[in-house]
Each structure stands twice: as structure tokens, then as C-alpha cells.
Length: 371
Picture 1 (tube, rainbow, N blue to C red):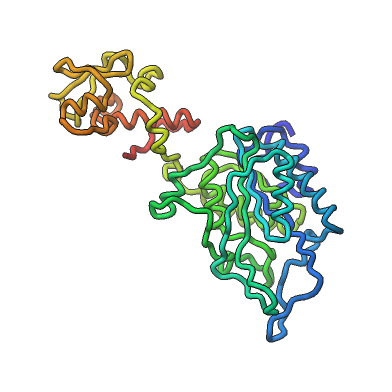
Picture 2 (tube, one colour):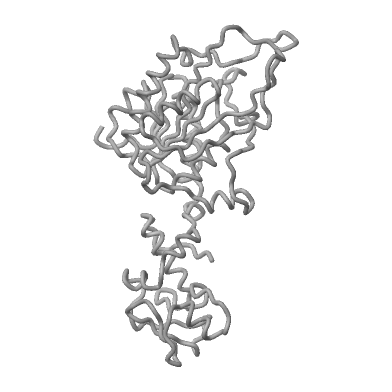
């Protein structure tokens, strides 16, 4: 395929289909591969009712060697498809995640985090012979060590009530209305909660990024990607799941674009100077700036990115603001420019946000102003 089949569920073997996709074409891969549980007997509750464990044909492998060979093949294709700035997420249990992690490192992936998804409502251990399995592990890795990659740190901090997001995520299992059922039975034995994918995609992708899920199942990745304004590609070999996923995703309404715009991190704010806006044409030497929007307190923009206040003092927007107030000053919020389109005086931070959005590939001409 010369072009990506965006926003489609592809029916077939994931390795065969991935081999047909162009290299260096996706921004993120989320993979929920077979667990290879190797169950040796049926499971029953104390009341002798049978537990619906994972015993699907797609989870059957002859031995560990066969599973490792399969894992190496799909990981190799995922690596080929990822951009150099791309990252890979893999989720698994103790049955398979350590084997997968070893193979990932052998292939050259650089592990960024292991995330522990702590299930707040785990299935109990009915036989009472081991600890209840109350978590799964996600490995987050980048394709090319040392290359830049997307991590929306401030979005995660905001999602966590202003506190730095940790690597232990308390999220319940998929239950209730979210759990897909066919004739009263669970449609998929390992359907993941949308909240888990929401956190994965919000943390490591941007609006418009392409997310590939080679083990698509009933389409949770596509549901969340569509809702968050990401493009997606799903691969699934079970025709029943393909149909369920297509119907499920078709019913999703994307969130309004104005609420999905990338937030500007404090680190990004520090890297941008007024000179950056001047050299990129957002302001020009000689343009007037007004302190706190007051027409009686004016400065002129200089070619080097400094400003000259009406009393002759020159310096950065922060230094001149400090000169005026006698106190520390955030020049981005203090200085206003005249916007010819609206006829208003607006904070120059709006121009900085326009520059950030353009640098990130966002082309909307009317960015939302956020201090």
C-alpha cells in the first residue's frame, strides 16, 4: 500500500497486513497481543459455575518458542512502521509481558516506562491458591533512542488534578454498558476499558497523529482515537470482531476540535522568545506594544527581539515590564499588540500560541486564547 488506510479496520493477519504498509508512517502503536496463558484446566467459582477465562483460539500457541517467534515478527513490523519519533505501547500479564519486553530490548526499542494498570475491580482467585491477579503491565518504549518523542506531561498532570502523573494507574475493568455483549455473552474476553486507552493516547500522541493497533479486537483504540481527534488503523483477524468494531466506532462522535488543541507546556513557553516571533513574521521591527493594554504606555519592537519603551529603556519584554512595575513581570501576559482583524488590543501570548500551533502542524487560523 502506497498510502495509509486511515480510519479503517483491516481484516486479516496483522503481520501480513503490516508488511504491506509503508515504513516510517505511524506515530504510535498500541498492541494488546495474545497472552499465551497456557491454561491447563477449566476454572470454576466456589458455587461450581464456570469462569469465562481466556481460552480463545487466538491465544493458543504450541510452545514458548512459537510465541516468541510470533512476537519477534510483529514487533519487527511495528518497528518498521513507526516514525523515528514514534513510540510503542504493549500491554500484557505476567504470562507474556516479560518475554515481550526482552524481545523489545533485543530489537533496539528503548523502554521509557513500565506502567502498572491496577484494576480496582479485579476478578478474584476462586481457587484460593494464589494472590488475586489485580494488575496488568504496559511497556512504553520509543523506536529510536535519543530521538524526540511525544509526551504531554502537562496534560497528564492536569488529568491527575494538578499532580504529576505516576506509573500506577487505578482504572476499573471494562464492565456495565461499556462491555460489549452478543446474545448476553461477552463479545470479547479481554476488552480493555476506554479510560485506559484515553490515558495512553492523551499522554503520547497529538491531534492528527496516526495510531496503529495490530490486535484491534472490538476497537477500543479506534473509539478513543476518533474521539480525541487522532487518526487510526486497526488490524483484526476475527471477522466477528471486525464487524463489531466497525459498528462501534461508527457511532462515536469526535470531540470538538477547539477542545483538543495541544496545550503549550511551560518548557515550550520558555524556549520561545519575542525574537522568535519577529524572525517568523508574527511581529515586525517598529510594531507598537502596549503595557497592560494601556495606549499611554507604549514600546516599540526592535529587530533583535527586544523592545524600547517610550522613556528610552531597552530590553526583553520581561525586563522592560520589570522596569515599569518595579517587580517581576511575565512579559507575555503584560504586553499587548493591536490586532487589525478584530480591532482590539490582545496579549502577545496569543501570537506565541499561534507560532506553537503552526510549529506543531495545526493550521486553524483562529486559535483559542489560553493564559
